[in-house]
Amino acid sequence: MAKWTMVFQFNLLLVIFLVIRFSEASGHNMFGMFRSTNDKQEGNSSIWAILVAGSKGYDNYRHQADVCHAYQILTKGGLKDENIIVFMYDDIANNPSNPRPGVIINNPKGSDVYAGVPKDYTGKSVTAANLYAVLLGNKTAVKGGSGKVVASNHNDKIFIYYSDHGGAGLLGMPNMPFVYATDLINVLKIMHARNTYDEMVIYIEACQGGSIFQGLLPEDLNIYVTTASNSIEDSWATYCADTKPPSPPEFDTCLGDLYSISWMEDSESEDLRHETLEQQYLKVKKRTYNNNSYQGSHVMEFGTLRINNETVSVYQGSTPRNFSVNPGPSFSSVGVVDQRNADLYSMWQKYKKSTEESQKKELLKKINEIKSYRVRTFETYCGSLTQYGMKHSRTFANICNNGVTKKAMDKAIKETCSSHKMGKWDPKIIGYSA
Ligand SMILES: *[C@@H]1O[C@H](CO)[C@@H](O)[C@H](O)[C@H]1NC(C)=O
Ligand SMILES: *[C@@H]1O[C@H](CO)[C@@H](O)[C@H](O)[C@H]1NC(C)=O
Ligand SMILES: *[C@@H]1O[C@H](CO)[C@@H](O)[C@H](O)[C@H]1NC(C)=O
Ligand SMILES: *[C@@H]1O[C@H](CO)[C@@H](O)[C@H](O)[C@H]1NC(C)=O
Ligand SMILES: *[C@@H]1O[C@H](CO)[C@@H](O)[C@H](O)[C@H]1NC(C)=O
Image 1 (cartoon, rainbow, N blue to C red):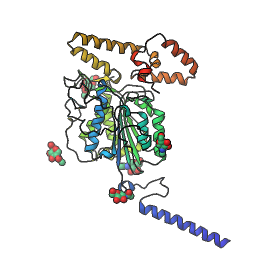
Image 2 (image 1 turned 180 degrees about the horizontal axis):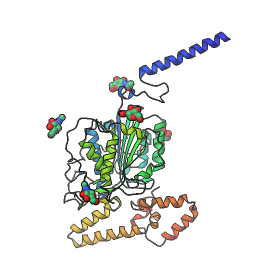
Image 3 (image 1 turned 90 degrees about the horizontal axis):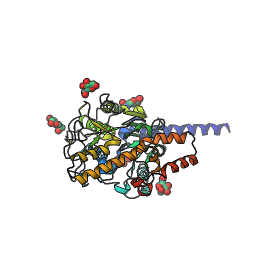
Image 4 (image 1 turned 135 degrees about the vertical axis):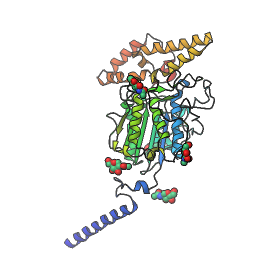
């Protein structure tokens, strides 16, 4: 008996020893729980990028412009189209309001950023469900679109960039429902549990962007996030008519968003093989703070912060670059427009320029319709959440968290809503947000 036990123990030790040697030799660790640092260099590590513009409509030109611009940076950085997945409604370049048909710019002096952008998920296929399916690499769950999904492995890096309106705990989508923080984070947790990436970086342009991650994103998922704004403030549009610098005179819409153009113009002007994520974060934070004016927001970072000592090239590519899509960044304060008012702002610009009385009247009517809808804060929840309504979703969440029963809320909403016409915000027309 004793002898057999000894033999057994010896064999067990031998097995353990061999497994350890094997994993050292192959660059893999025994159970895949910890990885040796060199397999990142030795293994076949790819970068996957998911780019999402969450809005539609010409007045939201800037979000799709941001995303197209991001594509150009990544593709010039050496990422292959098969590893870049783009979600955008694609109603801007050929929109009748676009003064430069077939072209999208993201900077007053910038050149076209639209050419070559893959049309993976456009129009009705730009949905939260498709975004989750793409992230989870689940081809059968995808509806419409190119069917391209993230097919990454445990060596790969993932870069996600999103630009649109947001609210407390949610990100807009051009088709309902929105992206909810808990759903998104749940998807990230599943990806982590399935070991489908090594490390991930997420950049989010949205009002109240911090509310998606603050207190919700675990620090041990190997995910590093920066957001344009903290949990309670708006983020800002820029390169608008009448801002400094202005969009070219033929545009009456904003061309970009402050946080977004800040990271992208930085990526275009630095050698990303040497700049770290932290250095980029600090520069973007400074520029987005907009010289301490009230027209700025606080860029935040969340998640696995140690990742920010890696170079930007690890996530955005590293081809030595020398291109001039945009002039270099200026760190002086820039003129901006609140994300939520950017549509009203562009309507005012159109109104000012218009010489036709009937068009002026029509625009004024539209402006007043939007404004009067917006002051009815509570009533916003009676229709679908508009981009302005999102701002108040925190209030809404607070009501829910404070134990007001669903029945009491239904009653209050019914009473409040029965007296006003929802018009085009009727959820029967545009859909419910959840
Ligand atoms: C790495 O990529 C090369 C070429 O694409 C391939 O031949 C090799 O099998 C890959 N190695 C691993 C470990 O996947
Ligand atoms: C992929 O999506 C389909 C359809 O929604 C679902 O039935 C299946 O379980 C999913 N597969 C995985 C691996 O999550
Ligand atoms: C980043 O810092 C960690 C320790 O926090 C270290 O192990 C790692 O090697 C560093 N990475 C780089 C690229 O400097
Ligand atoms: C980059 O541009 C500069 C200035 O235009 C030029 O001097 C330099 O040779 C270029 N480098 C490469 C690698 O093309
Ligand atoms: C920042 O703001 C201060 C005053 O608020 C002003 O004097 C200064 O010129 C501004 N700096 C830049 C770079 O715009």
